[in-house]
Image (cartoon, rainbow, N blue to C red):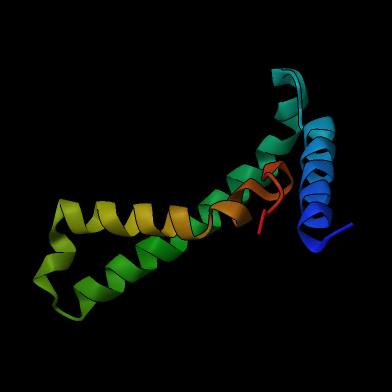
Length: 93
């Protein structure tokens, strides 16, 4: 079996395992809510800290709605795997 075929097989196996442990109903997903909520709060607190630091340094751009939106979006996208925790799909390289 070649390296590429082995990698494909491992990817399929990882996706299948993730599908099996993923919550299928809203009721099953509710047990993950506290962890997702706390991780999201932690990440957004970091974003708020960055915006407040930029404003404290006197940067006028920190008062802009678009700057704040970009900071929040950037933090969310950068830390999405951390926020999703056990619900995140496996990384496929």
